[in-house]
Image (tube, rainbow, N blue to C red; front, side):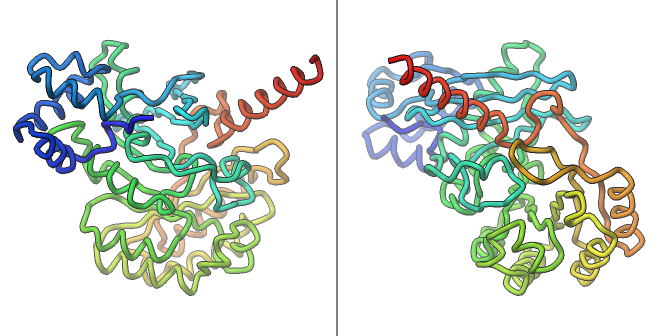
Length: 361
């Protein structure tokens, strides 16, 4: 399979074009056709010479994702199930907010982090996505919007889909450079958020990148015992390693960090945990925001959604301690809301179909 053209940053494309005997300005023309005119075939690039088009067709492809399922919610959320060139499937979600249109992208096929409450982690990591495969998720969603002829554009990105972004670091950084490039999609750095479960060494590296991209940390518990119970990554990077990495990021960037906290009934949603979380964040509260997330139940998973009273108590406890927080607005609750849920269902259906076929034969 030829690699996706979307996997090249503008500088990489420029280098590739000149190395193959074409003029440097061709890169800008190609970039414009890809990200502003959003072509789906190299032959559509009208002002690019045929020899350059032939070169591109020989070495790259534009479309590597095939839309398998598209679910549309009453609230405007659209969940896409894409098939990759090797038959693997991933999820991408378009969400509507009052501030714009946000897309949640996937970075890996499956996930090895193994959070016990997460639908994404039910199926282990198969492979990393290439930078091009991550970028193409944005392009497919934007092309979906283009077909509506409403002049809508993707304005925000959250890297919170299936997989751990920092476990696919180099491809993640290339993706960020492509979508942020002002000559192309020009999605502002401050409109992009990367979420990590807490791979501490990569948090230091990310802080040193010198980019304005937002960072979110999936913390989900305020102490090691509880966090290890629901997030096995805490064995490798317990709070003693994680909090210094956060402090380094805050000192280096002076940018606010969001702490994601999913509320699980009678597990981590008591006032006691809220107080512990407030203690943990007290010395960095000026650059901290806690995003409280109501849990979307997953089949064959023991966890339940916290009661509204527990959520309110947790929220108020943090606020009383000076920790800014909010409860995440839910999207797409009528269309397999939990991340990875649609993918898991589709894989189970395919297994059942193959099993039935074997029995029939």
